[in-house]
Image 1 (cartoon, protein in one colour):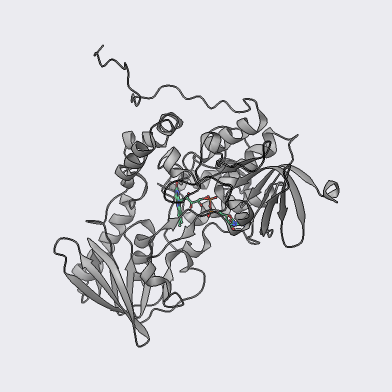
Image 2 (cartoon, protein in one colour):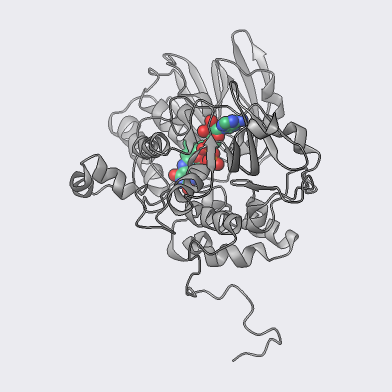
Length: 434
Ligand SMILES: Cc1cc2nc3c(=O)[nH]c(=O)nc-3n(C[C@H](O)[C@H](O)[C@H](O)COP(=O)(O)OP(=O)(O)OC[C@H]3O[C@@H](n4cnc5c(N)ncnc54)[C@H](O)[C@@H]3O)c2cc1C
């Protein structure tokens, strides 16, 4: 029976941008390899639940699926523009950054165009028989020599909010999944990152109808900008990432925490747009202030109050507990790493760190003990190993190159980078200046 089941060299779980990049580079550069990437989505939309008006990439469009390692690939963003006959108009528009809607359409175009990407194929279960992996989708069964896990992260919200989840208490990742009406509602947004900013701005503009009040809480001391300056952007280079991966685990943890706003802040453009919208509405037009910005508050508790909620937050500088009555609470509180449910049969044999997270080692491999000749690669799972670039688009093409070079056992992609302006490694271990 097993021999009649199609055998793949590499099976991908998920075809979000990260695995899509592996798929695109494998399709044209490793045609002799049988690769296939399965995604649950039947209609490809990038983070559909957060596809809001006026949202933009935090990253330059050249950091697309392929360009960083294979600029002549047909799956580049530039080729997408040419194929859609809007290359010149794109240039004339002088967009400082591409909209999320356009980038999503680029990803859809690639996903639908690649023969090795199969949409509408949720992977339900993965087992290993000692030689091969067995993947089961709803209708099919495949064997694979190796896996590449790219199922993304799970929405995270505080424990106290979990039991209240529903139409009126939701994580940001589902806010755009259906039509919503917040007219005359008291809306509270929790979370001071980019998603919180996008939701606040849309609330302010009445995207879901004019709310009665709109409160935006952030644990951060202020509405912190993303640091997009040149030397900070060096964190998003292969050279930095390589030396970072060699550091001690506790140093890596410390550095990731210190670099938070290089990846988790709000774009200066979005902050300015919000500030200008507030100025125009409340200072120039003189509307009574119904939108409130509340940084340095930690949401701490929540109770149900009739049809709404009472949310308690602790004011950082004073420790005073404040209460916010709300009809709708939206948690823009980020995402957490988790193995997909379909990997449950293998989970026990995947190594974990002290926080229980699956550990990613060299070549983006899970530390998996299950089969000698089978490997499990993982994308978007190695932040503590590779640093803050790991969950970002910036190095996805490079990471795909690392994975495919390792998979094929040869240097399909030239991944060497010239020395940049910064010396990250010690120059001479004896400490004598030269
Ligand atoms: C709203 C938003 C905007 C972002 N913007 C930027 C940005 O501008 N710049 C930047 O650098 N980073 C950005 N990021 C961070 C990061 O680049 C994205 O989250 C990116 O989508 C991660 O890609 P991924 O492929 O790991 O996961 P995802 O995009 O989450 O894709 C995972 C895919 O796996 C599929 N899947 C899951 N389980 C299964 C299964 N069992 N079987 C089959 N398929 C499955 C899902 O359907 C999904 O398509 C953003 C993140 C968010 C949430």
